[in-house]
Image 1 (cartoon, rainbow, N blue to C red):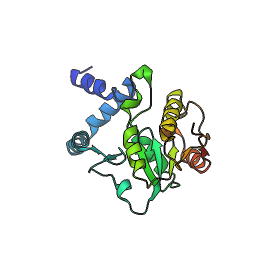
Image 2: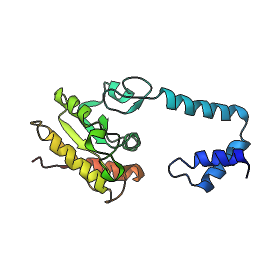
Image 3: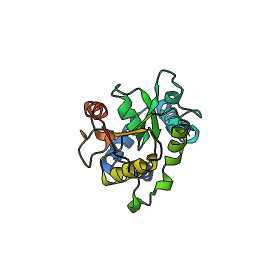
Image 4: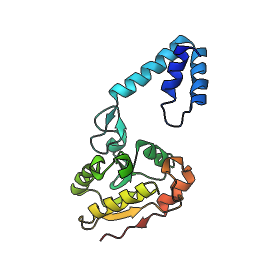
Length: 200
């Protein structure tokens, strides 16, 4: 195999879910493309990596300091949906069943991967709640052990906010599944059938 081909296959196979066979297929497809679109693709990747920002209010991806969702005056500002990643925001938005705000943690507690509570954007969430506008926090985390641990931790941190309703999406999503892989109908039902979490 050509060294150049080997290099691009190696780089593409670093992406999650891309094995060497898929990386080879993508590399050969790129080779068949016209130079213009390849240049545009490379430029888009570089601009995305260098210019993307995190929303100062919710930690969602944005091309400015505050994301469009946080700036949307039509959204319900009394409800915030806490998710693990930006991909989860996209999955929930795809259902068109939720009209509140979001908070992106940037991961879940996972001691095996060296991720602790201080690595997540929990303090930003607490700061937003302390402003007094938020009345309900929906914990929409994956039903993995790490997701459940994170949910328990956040629920404990939220216990000090008197009158704050803390709910979890209904468990229409199977244990061990990740929200990003659930279909939109399952997510919609899970949002509609959310349950209260007891605060200790």
